Amino acid sequence: MLLDYDEDIKTLIQLGLTLSQARVYVSAARLGKAKAKDLSEESGVGRQELYRILSELFKIGLIEKEISNPTQFIALPLSKGALALFDRKRDEVIQLETKTRVLMCKNNEAQVVEESESQLCLLPRKYLMENKGGHSYANAKKCIRFFAAFERLEGAFAYNTDVYIDALERGVEMRVITEKVDDNQYVQLKNVAASLFSRKSFNVKFVHRLDNLAISIIDDKEAYFALDPKKTIFDDMLLWTNNKSMTALASHYFDGVWSSALEP
Image (cartoon, rainbow, N blue to C red; front, side, top):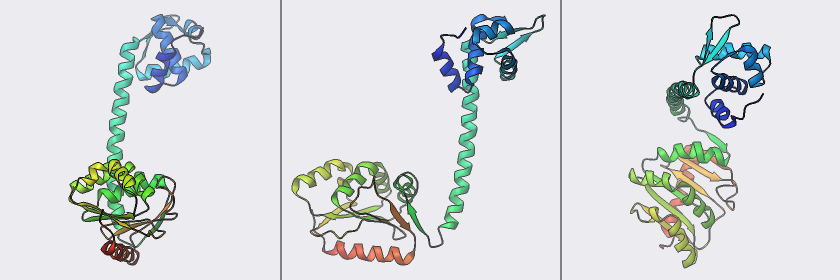
């Protein structure tokens, strides 16, 4: 018959067993010592499949075989079996973490070589926020500059505050240009990004007329251009480039607007 050990079975599956393996192991642990016939009835697993699963559990170390006629199977108690599976899972995670770090190091080395050449990439928001953008901000050394509409800027502050704070703490200067808003909106913006506004290296200026642009410039080496500046950062796609002409053009445009923009 099928067991009512649903939670135990779910846990064992999370620890790496298949559903059939978990059912057979729980059945064997419940019976203590059993013949294949009894295990098949208890677990609901057919005899032909059962022998294959018992062989797999034996290799894992969850089942012992008693040399007798007929052969009987003795299960490791569930508490010890679960701990053994957990230890194996932990070792797999540690090995995977090591391999991931090696992969990341190789990728970072390759990326340095690759990005020394001029590039132009179209990025979906999810990739931008979780990969490319995070890499850009994490490696910023001098200045990060934004030019964006109020609503878009508000979303960027709410989503990326920790990233921006990390940059500011490294001594990176941040300059932001957005549209002139009323006092209530300005207070709202300051509340969203209070930890940014409290930093001396963070500055915001306003313009009465905001061009239909949304630009982010990092160290005069990278620039992100919104395809639809009227959308929020959560809905838009962006164009990223390290092309020297395009980043220089974006930087000169920003500096020109900044020089005539209004203080808060």
